[in-house]
Length: 397
Image (cartoon, rainbow, N blue to C red; front, side):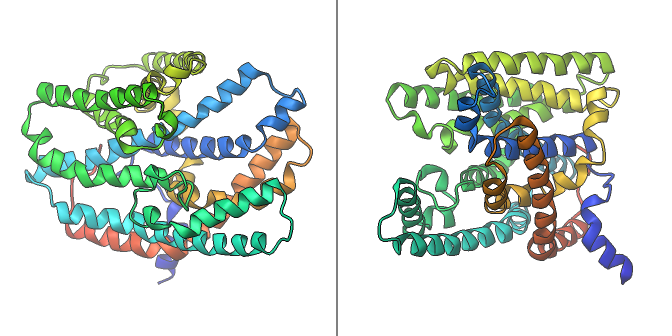
């Protein structure tokens, strides 16, 4: 009994031989950069005003917005890998079971944060409404809260990435991934897994290129504001993960040394800064820049999957494991949890102050999300594990 309690509480720290540790590191790295970006986003103008950053450096930081695509890549890679291994072993996919596992993993925490956000918006709306002469910021907050509580349906039905007035600001990515999960098992079962590798890759590349055309279409028709959020303009980030798995699964990199992997990593860094330059062009920023950053994340992921690579060794560091396991929880809750700390800590802008607050905020968010995970998600995680034991599948990516 004692061992079960310890495992329940500290399971996020426990090594799982079925996992590729470096992918845990990449996921943790992604969520840490997302936290950095969202914290930075609220202080950009203050840093510029005080001359603590140049416009060029600012562009590099703003390019971190693309690290959401690394999340998508890893999701696409791991979900597809699981389906691939199942089909490889059983020559079929249990679609009902696939959906059930996704529901157990995602919905309990998601609908909990929706409820909390709705109640929080009600409180904010009541407070702002009671003010006799609200200032500009208070009026904005009032209107934002009013929109949130008047139209929660796109959040509830997971189509909030098509609603700019969505209640839960970060729900757009969950909506996008759910659309991907709905389609993927059928696409695999009836199309992809029926094809040999070469034809499968052609189909995947054809699917991957489609959102680029949609992005150009929206950009030239003057409605480019929603490009970053919409499923039809962004699903390529998930399919690039599938392509990475297919390439890696063919063992094209089996003979790569640590030097090869390091070269891929350095190429990823160089392309990242090339992307910073491309983002300065208004058309390329909303179209081709996404594909360039996909290439960055392909190279980064491959370099992190070569065991001889120093990149692999870095991302396989056990420090990243619990952060990765809690990354979904952190993503859902970081907005609500961080806002109080940020308001208190960023009165006097400086780089040392910023990084100090960032470290403190990350630590507090991690501890808070660990508790939230144990209360909300862990019971459903155990049900999912039980399902996995009843219907075992091949383990390794």
